[in-house]
Length: 445
Image (cartoon, rainbow, N blue to C red; front, side, top):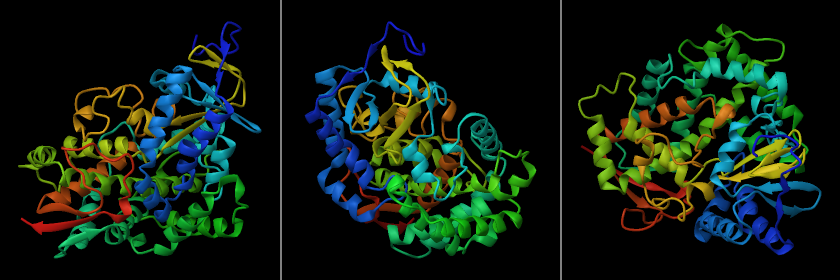
């Protein structure tokens, strides 16, 4: 019955008890919000790692599924109709039917993203969204594994990786993050923006405030300052950057291209987290590391390459520790999901850690399993970059830049993880991994 709006034969979604609703909010939803939905909070991430919070999330949702079945579960949240998705098939259905009747924009998401991209595609709907989606896809080329600007991107990544690694014998987050943001600024805005930390610091402050979503009044002056600086950068975009493609891309009065670019900068931030975690996985799993190194052998890494083993490592990093732990949709009309009727205005919540780490459904849930991404279509519910019509348009560029960076590290270095939790093939991987305290020892080959 899925996909038949307003069918009278569908039953209403099962309601969780007050106690189960409170436990779900406390052990599943609250940690997702606390860590920072828009900008990660390092202190909170450290606490959540000690609590192994995402494993608790998985167990909470497993218990809910055992008690109430796998259909959509209505949580008792005052003033809001909230439904939790518990079945992988329903995840696929929700994402396949976005943005109608499952809209990508919700009040919570608008509150979080409007402070720095008020007319961004993620919080647009109808004709506005369609126009802005077309623009984003035209610039980002998600269907191409290698963007037409892949060659200058490779040069940028290798230059910054070489400068980062140099003759250093260690690599930690405090060294990696600034180098990664230099890559981001050069890829998105061009070489002249390499050291424009003021621009990305402005965005970081706006994102940090946006963690509070509707509870924060916003900073319209700061937003205006940021967008003005960004507009100036786009007006003088360097060749070989994504910004240089913007003037060549058709726009309408609906597009507002300047306000699409913050999402490109924003999306590369969690991509850096995924890349750093992928390095931790590779450095602690000898078999997979050897396969990745074999995949690099005899390749000219100065030339753009699709690196499937390293791309799979990045995808595994995002599967194991999702950088978007909650996918939100809101019903635009009465519709059905899993044979249950949902009224218009229902917030539909997909908690990706549950579907990515559900050991009762996935044999390799707690293992580093890059083969999941090398052997055809992944299992239902594995959505590292979302799925369906609203799938992330930057997914190909992110995977390309991340895998190119990993190749630049592994090409001439042996890498060991020497700070952070113990990882390896002989033990289940932790449910939560704090990237900010990872540290590696590097030895030049």
